[in-house]
Image (tube, rainbow, N blue to C red; front, side, top):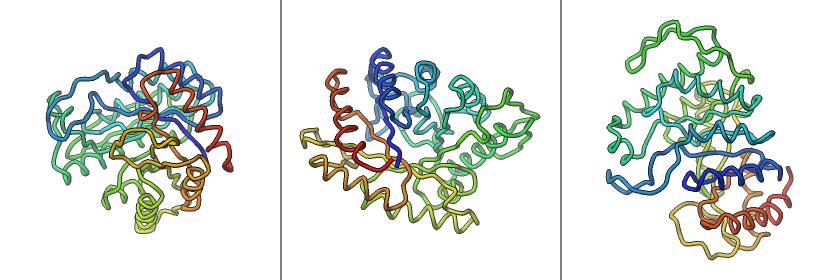
Length: 296
């Protein structure tokens, strides 16, 4: 199983790049960034708080690292035009020497759409828009030029040159709905979800069913899962999946993900404190006491 890091977009760029360099040197598999413009709220109310823009940070991450994969968890197709996403991803794949993963989603965070005047369609229309977007992205990353006339997007003889280093450049989708899972099974290389082993297992089972429904071999789909880790039991509750306990107990829980068929565990670091030095110490401890005790 591979182990990757998900830093928050709220810290100063210098601190973020120090953390990413350290992850690269320490042997982490990948570094992921969220693609949001502000903290989330329960309604459409805009929220203040430092939130650096994902696509502004990714080139810097690629430039200061040598081996980690870099990617988005995930870029909403309500916000980004698919042709632009394809061009950005291909460019960063070139910049990184073939380490880019393009994570895509249908869009969900109400307050940022409302504040920036970006339409957030109802779920059915949003999924239809997403299917057109991922179709265009996949085609542009692999074909000489693309013409597509859909309900939501139209491109005409659209090139994406130069092509990415990777063939194909991996597309990841973060989702859990039945229709979105079928779209993922048709078009994506990787799938992502949140959850403890008890939560994530059934969701991965639903993905396997979706693959079988569309005639995709589930073994050809990489799967990854996110959860917080709290070794000391001292982090404040955050409403997200959290693995808590001594290192051996957390290692056992992560081992269960591997038994369920997950290929990658992604650790968000947002609950590890605001101080960069203390956060670095906690990450090093988690890696040494948990991840390094498990089979690669």
